[in-house]
Length: 245
Image (cartoon, rainbow, N blue to C red; front, side, top):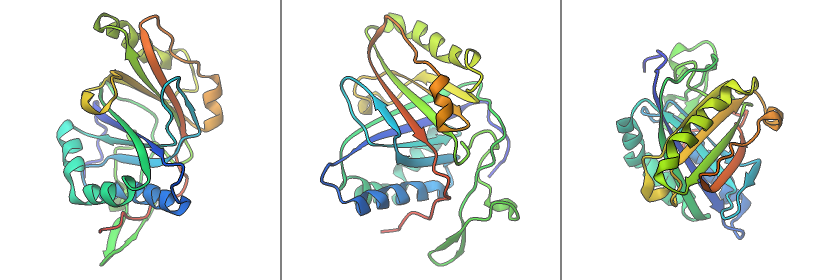
């Protein structure tokens, strides 16, 4: 896979609400297998885990998946890949009772160097991660992967009418210039409305650590009808491969 930094990426976020009755071990298996989807060729970056904070007047989510792709076609390849389909059917659907997803194009993408990792197949059903010595183990453009230990704030916004979308996007995209703690910021209009519960704009701000989100204020606009804000810390542990059912 090419290591050149794309100027445009596709952001894909899935918000999950685990059933109160779900077995904690089953939830952990869901997270492990979602992170294991990093082995898929179309994936530039993927991270899944529990949310640190969820603020919403109408929705509650307990877990989040964030992934990145070079194109909409790569996102479609990921969505329809048999391994992804098997993970969703075998590990996600049995333990969640609510799901929301948003996708947007992040144009003029830029950010600090943050080398990601990819699992390499070393034998039938066995994977390993080599963070330094094996060049082929690295899986994404240096600026695309959100590094382990970093944190992000996701804002998903529902506007009252279409006329306000431009102003909301302008406000969201201008956040990076207002807060030095933000190292990456993307914002865009959702292009998968069938899964977004009416939310049409989303943004992600990436900072070095969870505590740094304390200085980042929320986007506020009279055009909002509803907003979901989630804080999420990227797991420091490298993922194991997804199970192949």
